[in-house]
Image (cartoon, rainbow, N blue to C red):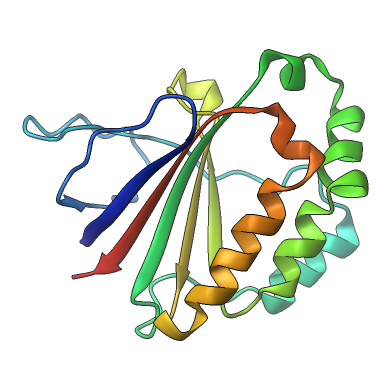
Length: 170
């Protein structure tokens, strides 16, 4: 259970403010709770756009979620433009890593900032990705820097909806 501290629209339509958020991990889709203000779903998948060496480094440095010291979190749902999805996978990889250095930037903040990516596009959800981050309060400035750096890349010119949801563990 997480207390929602703030919801900020970055690009496009925001989500309504809610007092708290539950993260439910399940192998089957969850039905919407009657009194929920919004419901987002995604699935974890294999790491995409990453080379073998990058995947190995991520696995070596990444720590798991739900660490007791990780009292802060961010859920950042993102939708990319149709122009992004019209690109071939190798073209997306070139922008994602070779130009924007998305993976390399993220690795710099491991293990302090744990993350998990959920894919939603194939589920016909309102966002393509649900990016989930957890970190200890003393790493809040590092998290802000990480987000600022990623948003300044060429990759982010393809984002047409992004909502920044900050949370505290209850």
